Length: 358
Image 1 (tube, one colour):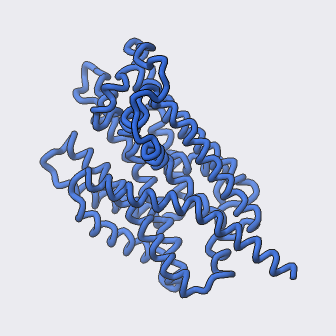
Image 2 (cartoon, rainbow, N blue to C red; image 1 turned 90 degrees about the horizontal axis):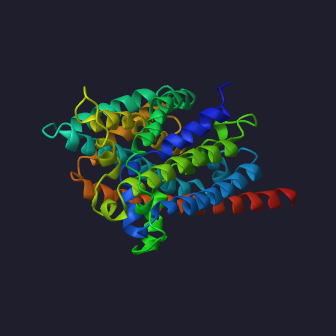
Image 3 (cartoon, one colour; image 1 turned 45 degrees about the horizontal axis):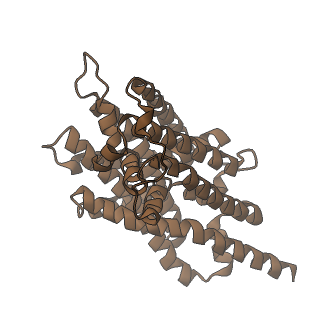
């Protein structure tokens, strides 16, 4: 019998999936689209995420822990589901791949400007494949280790106490912002990853208390984003944040140590762990989907070809703006999946229950 995920490991896993490269630029988006005190937007967005998670909870409750693939296959013909499985696995694989490619390009820009970024990308993909072969339970344990390796960086916010000026926050809320609807979607993208909990049903039991763990993971992520925004707006100010490309890295550059130069590069390296977990979980999700299409193929073979295909596609976008455009498009698809899929599953479960009762 396979080991089930614990509540603690699941909460950390959700938090780590949500911690992608978007963390480097989220405060710039807050300032650009929402203006003064834009950091407050993380709270209503988090509430929207919680509402979506609650929808997923009803899928779990009505389906009594059934896999979403089993629910779909009980009511929808396989010839319809096969293209859907392949399409959604492609989206998941590309999201994971492009998140890693964006991380690599930023890392190359700051630390190794003369090195081919695909060298780092291939190395990350090899690490991802090794982790994938260990199974989800071991991935969750690894994510917990990585969590403790990176969460201490939140304490760095204390370094800016002397630089923080309350007047930089201003008494106005969301003044000088524009296109807030677009900005809302942009901020929502920073929370994506929680929707993969739909695939965790077979890997949990009652002791896991899956959705309590998902809520906790999202809460940790919300507190982290809100604290980062509060400090950034109080130290840098909304006007300066609007013109910064990666405010978090600029914030880390303020920290000076007598024996280390460009310490932000050292801190940036720690974010490899969070990026790796995001990459691995999206590849894992893609593998879960393709296994429904090719059930006789070994799971390790699925992962190998998914990573290989995504790696080849990642050669196409070569600049950050292109990658961000791709991720934005894929993110919109993922938001649609996060809201539409639970509704479809709830309707199917109610129909199946009614059919069974008749």
